[in-house]
Figure: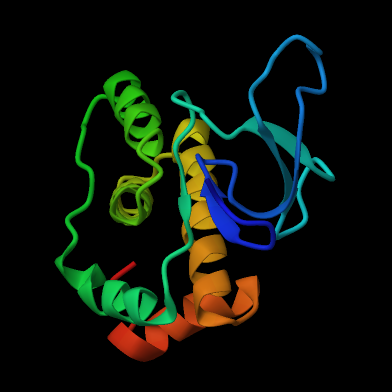
Length: 169
């Protein structure tokens, strides 16, 4: 169980602070303990209730500053997620995002960057699905790295570039 005040990753919803524990807000007969989670960054909600014993949505502690720096240094070695057919690519993105894993977010971001470059070369339009998954992957990746590194969300991309150079993510 996570402690009050701990920063956690809640699936692909981003980084949250465990602000309290509570009983079910919906079913008074539900005996599970729920976390009251407040988003670390502006989001669509002011808080959410999440069962502490949740097998459906992956929850984990935010990585440490040392883990974040080591991860960033390894980004050039992470391959992109390559799926040519748009329909299959969309499903691959969706399946990958469910892992809520930093490597997966980088794979998606790299895949969309490559797809964007191909579209520019061929004078085509990037699909909305690609841009939506890129945005979600960046939100999850940058959010966790910002908390781990103690920097602003909008500073993360420049931090990554300063460590590994441009063009790796």
